[in-house]
Length: 350
Ligand code: SF4
Image 1: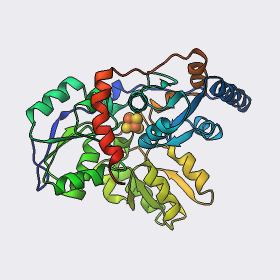
Image 2: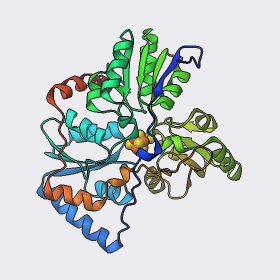
Image 3: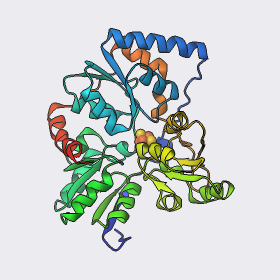
């Protein structure tokens, strides 16, 4: 293991997903008339099923629009779970990836939680297998286990704290003030960023997001030279060299807010391009450019759009409501144990 900062920041073996394990997914392009019909069908089914559509910022823009038009929500993973548990509907349709469906089920055990597809995974979740993670925790039992929300319910159940990218920094800062040594999983870039910001003693699992890891320093530097007045907004799941170029580093909701609050008229955005839909709606006068994913080491398996998020197509939303299949279940004992660190995060003053 290597020590790469003054305080110990060690990495486990590499758990980044190899490119060949990342699916190539090309959603079917729909005609405007097909979109209109599908949206109408889904709206009616939502009423009939007493259901609400809860969508992530990275899913298809038509699904995002429909969620808002039907009084559901478009949010980051934490707000999706909160919204779902506070909403009176008996069925939640979670348009996102599997861990989001699981979190919704844990927070709303009495509700039916369905997803447009159960094939929507996440490279961070897949890169943190519960058995290996359990051994890692046992080998470092003196450490407080902090896991990112992008993990399976089983991994969450082994943790002391669950965090999202919007609260991770504050929670680690709080733990560091109590002289806690931290075991962090699964995103190495986010873990490294938080370690640098807080100076906390962190032992890092070595997973990565296939979307954010594709942003490359050299390509971004060239783009900044091309658009010198543009602000660069970067998600902290990106590599450290990319983060260093940023004008602002933050979670999806913090990036969205920064686009309104910062004075720039133009932004380069280094996160999943799905977020640009809400940014353009919120700030129609400003210009938003996708950060490039080309450059040495880029495979472009994702090209700034999560292939698993892309699986949440309108037709699949409709079909899941029609059939009421794709239901998410979490084993009750795992759900009970995962709820403890999740509740700590929800109760943490934000
Ligand atoms: S964008 Fe990255 S972190 Fe988010 S679901 Fe896709 S693979 Fe996981």
